[in-house]
Image (cartoon, rainbow, N blue to C red):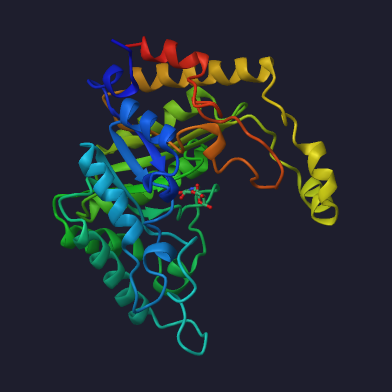
Length: 347
Ligand code: XIL
């Protein structure tokens, strides 16, 4: 029998993938085939974000999220809701009144409560866990000065978890963030989660977004973050896993390109396919990380890739246009890359 991610790791953690609405709607049948074959968990890439699911104060748009949840149920999957409260993709209306002025603290708390409880109760008992709050701690460990913090204060986090819990007491509740392996940020998140626990707030797990680059973080840095968070008694999850093979563009490069788009080509190092060398480094990094996930599997409940295959990845064209990336384990032809066979034999 052919090895698959979900079978290989069934005694350790569920293995998931982010799906976009195009795929759920059936326009990318090969991606759906791979999803059904390999994965037992899904997360919505965009359709459950506030701006998508709640584009105006008096209007929820359910169609895409409903289809996503139905797909997960039909395939017996562990469904993850992403994300209830985030500074990004939040929709323009939520923070302001009709004149465009910031709303009061009470109004924003009430809007947040209404949003969380409407969405969570619609999928009560069907969505297994929610990314309740996404990305509210900065790399230096301080609070991101988002409108949530500015208008409500850091207590918005505790409130969000409590609202979600009221709406579905059985759902798992998560905090999710990127660069958690950066020590100052890791510690900031540690103390935020510790504070929630000390106050009796239910939090089940912390999601470490796995938007990695070839040089960083190292296996050791990510392992330290997992162990530190797990010492609080919460589980961890590797969410949003992808490994870019492209360099982060300097500000100068970004500025140059904004003046002359023809320069984009210069910063697209692998327009016709990744080099053997870069691919070898990518495969090594994936193997090393999966070995680490495996030896820490008592603390890890889920590993989720941020996309099925390279052609669908958000890493293409980001943060500058015109670049092709190769960050996932299935290539543009939907073929498994060489590391897949090794990873599936690790257990
Ligand atoms: C990204 C999606 O992949 C893109 O399609 C969208 O344009 C922007 O958001 N951290 C998160 C994810 O928590 O929701 C982001 O997803 C990637 C970074």
